[in-house]
Image 1 (cartoon, rainbow, N blue to C red):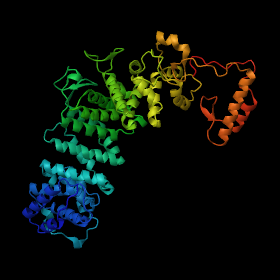
Image 2: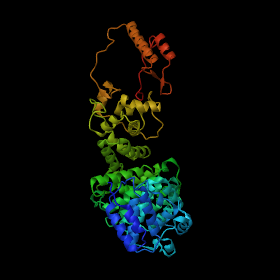
Image 3: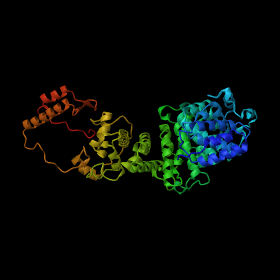
Amino acid sequence: MMMKMDVNAIIEKMETGEQDTILTALQSFNKEMNQCFTFSKEEEQDREHLGELVLRFLNRDLQPSCQLACLETIRILSRDKDCLHPFINHSAMSTLSRYAGIALADTATTADSQPVEGEGEEEADVYGELVKEASTPSENQDQEVIVEGLKSICNILLHNETGQVVAADLQLIKGVAERLKQCHDATWNHEVRFFDLRLTFLLTALRVDIRAQLSQELHGISLLGKQLDATLGLCWLDTLETARAGLEGIPHEDLPPLSRQQTELAMEILKILFNVTFDTTRRKVDEEEAAEYRHLGAILRHCLMSHADGEERTEEFHSHTVHLLSNLPLPCLDVLLMPKVQQGSIEYMGVNMDAVNMLLDFMEKKLDQGHKLKETLLPSLNLLTESARIHRETRKFLRSKVLPPLRDVKNRPEVGSALRNKLVRLMTHIDTDVKNCVAEFLFVLCKESVSRFIKYTGYGNAAGLLAARGLLRGGRDSGIYSEDEDTDTEEYKEAKAQINPITGVVEEEQPNPMEGMTEEQKEYEAMKLVDMFDKLSRTSLIQPMQLGMDGKMREMTPEDLRKLTHNPLFPPGEPPHSDSEDEA
């Protein structure tokens, strides 16, 4: 929404230096422009000049209402990414951070002593003589002022890289972290807490160095874990088992939904933690770090089992939770299975599967929605895959849900509404990442056994993963799995001999096209086919492939094709080799 206002009129009143006149002018500007998010090019210089005047005015000893009006004006002006020049120097950012209550004393002093880029002595403003008498904004506990300061800084960081550098120089993350430590202090209202978190999210999303600083120097995992704990109002029943304080013993499904404010704060914390833990799965963690992550994992399990105010909000909350769970070190995921089995819990092999079942339901919901599968489906699918790979009980539970004993041998694996059918359909999805992740999930549930994988998906659907793994000749990959009992149903055993391994179903018998041919005629037709392949490959219409000794596909060279043309397919008297049970 673009709105126009006479900025020059505001500038003229600013230059009078009278607080009451300036307050009235700024309040009028703020009211008129409050919903303005697009700005005209014509007034760029005027808006920049107004920003400079307002910043200088903030150095006076102002009444709270005037401080608030100035900061609201800066918030509005900082929405314009082309007019941020007055706000991205050390002095301006230091002023804003002091009003936001997050400036460190030493950095604030240093910043104030630095010359402001682009300002010379000839630009001494009308407020210069009053700077020495200015009050310290950090002492001001007016929370509306703090919030406006935080909003302005957030706008600047979002739109300008120089502002991000200055924020790092001023160590704003340390100031925010100090206030985040007061998570149990009722002094701070929801808006202060929310924009503290929003600023932390922007700093960690935009600056890798700040991400590392929060994680290591400021102990961000522990700090934000406590913040999340306090936000959700948790108590600890055991070392790694949580409950809602005052509602212990009540099943998760009967708990009241989290309030809108709780959900907003919790999601901001989850987003920051995602930034901070982004590289966790790529490196080893020591025992102390592992303990922190397991503690965090227990809180995330509670998030997964909690509901927000409304289905859409709950889904968004769970999405952030799943994304963060995917970042945790794999050995720490056992916390999802830690809680004791209680009445109403889903039990499997004596283990509480509530969280795993919730993840499975969430994954299926994302699959059914079919929207941006790479972004929405893969986090939960990858999380389930890795959990199944390292936890036997999780794998067996998921297999019972996704790949129950096979009874339907009449319909193709991709046909139907069962979860197995939906997943098999994605094994030929156009997005390589989607089809690879789905295939990996099903392969792990099959204990990486080729014969079992083909049994549930059909060789045609399985071929992509098998080719990539060098398993087209059959066998089993290198995963370590326990032995399972035979799960073949009577229906499957009876039809097994008639099942087409390519499609995975029993098909009607087709007439043999070579029936009545002599051996010479069969070989002639075979050689004719090879010759056709040779011609097509020479014109680059196709690229013939063959199965190498390593189980992977390789290109057929002209020499390979010539050998096939001049040699029989099978030596005399030698029948084609029949595959064993474990071979494709």
